[in-house]
Length: 170
Image (cartoon, rainbow, N blue to C red; front, side):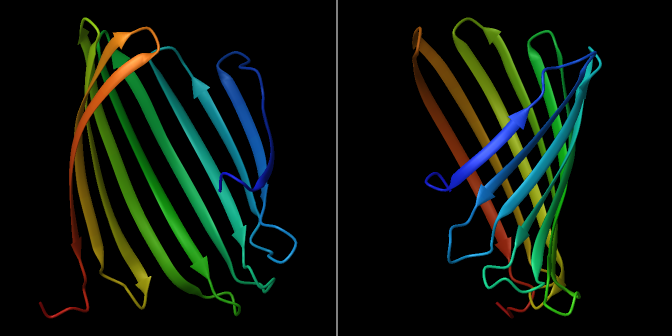
């Protein structure tokens, strides 16, 4: 929401720990405000993190969406490895789950070629509860970024996504 009013704070890194909080206002006529927090720890060989967000219902009811994510990233010379796992849970006005989506995301990168970096990103996601339970999404993206001059880059990227609708007979 690029035009939404936001406020946030990210602490300085202290002995590897860092935290942040933010609030995105949905506007006067909506109660779908987004409140987020994150904590990370960089222990030299890798960085780990955990984050949560709560998004209220636009109508101001007790329904809300909760998002949780944890992940890590590390590098060995020119090779980078990242993994994240997240859950997006939507609750209805009676407090029950109307939707729960689990997602895994992983990535590899290589920057050992002068002015060139290569990367791969994979994602798999599945709706666990609700009217769309069993729906699955998977995707892969590969890319190459070439630095032409300082501040000028060219990006070539290719992606593939596959969606399976559990309720479809086709």
